[in-house]
Length: 264
Image 1 (tube, rainbow, N blue to C red):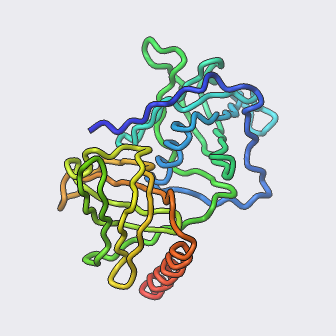
Image 2 (image 1 turned 120 degrees about the horizontal axis):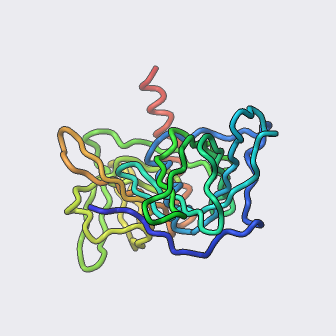
């Protein structure tokens, strides 16, 4: 199953698209979950937002060694590998070594991560450079929406219709910003990144049922020993009433507190 996401090209980035690094006196949070990292990279790819790379000259250890910003975009993302491809159209890839990569996501968050690479281009594609997911990213000013994992055996389901097909899929987590579903490759046939799901019925345990519109943001295949081939389906809320948002917020808070109590 191929879930690579191709870039809707905007053209080469311009100097005005360059993004500065997160300052040392800021307080970003660290994002280490490969699912979240893949979701962020996919968002950048779909939007065609620019990446700014600050490469360090060999032998230099401080900011004074920076060779200047290099602009690129993300041509495609394959969360299964996990792998993405940088498009340096209009720029020259950095020399072999370390680079800090910075991007602005939708204008309300700044993403920063480190890559150490030879920056070898793809065969026959001198502007494309394959790369693997970073181990961690720094995120600044992101609207916080921590996930709450659903308990094993609980009644947490998503039910909806799309393309003439009815879906009933288990939830593996939820937050104030969206939900994560799980399915077999056959069960999620017809779903793709960017697809709008209207009137989704979300059962969040025996005490809460909400109806909301969702947008599929990420599909990530994986394999488990018990379930075999599975696909994680990450969705954000596209439309949800203020009352439902407040109710969900209280439920998420209660879920976090309950899980913290169980760890003690």
